[in-house]
Length: 51
Image (cartoon, rainbow, N blue to C red; front, side):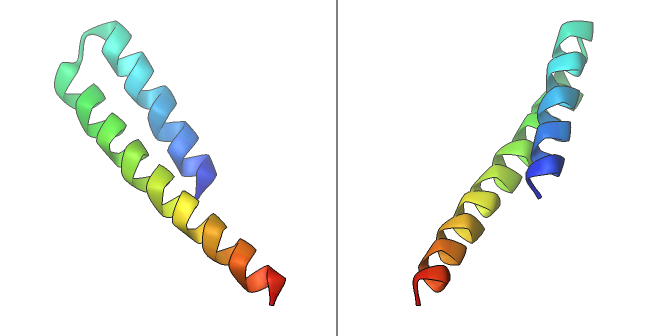
């Protein structure tokens, strides 16, 4: 899942440089959502690992 976050961040940066504002905003939003999901899953795995 972290891989997808990185892919969408790179896509947002490239689209922003090329001037595609709508595409960049959409890719950045997807990257944010995936990043927060990754963080939650990471914290849950840390908690379960201690048990």
